[in-house]
Length: 125
Image 1 (cartoon, rainbow, N blue to C red):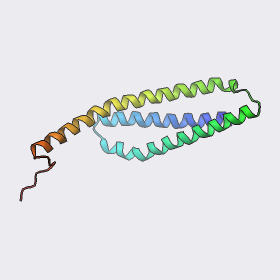
Image 2: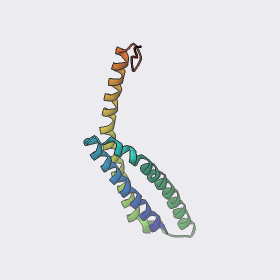
Image 3: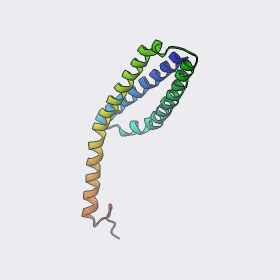
Image 4: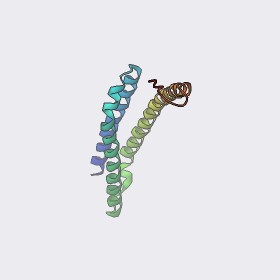
C-alpha cells in the first residue's frame, strides 16, 4: 500500500513538472491564454498531491504500528524526496521568469496611472 501511495505521488509530480515546463514554453512564446487554461488542472494536481501525502503518512503510521520496518521503504521514499526537490526547483525557475514579467507590467500600469493623475484610464467626454 505504501508503494502504491508513493507511485501515485510520483505520477502527480510528473504531471506537475510537465505542466510547469509547458508554462515556461508558453511564456517564452507569449501564449498566455494556455497558462490560464492550465491553472485549474494545476490546482487539482496540487490538491491531489496533498491528499496523497496525507494518505502516505497514514500508511507509514499503520506500518510502524503493525511492527513493520520503515527502512524497507527508504529507497522509494528517497526517490520521492528527490522528485519533490526537482519539482520545487522547476517551480522556482518558473517563478524567476514570471516575477520579473509581473513587475514589468506593474511598472507600466503605475506609470500610465501616474501620467493620468492616479487613474489607469483618462476618459474625456
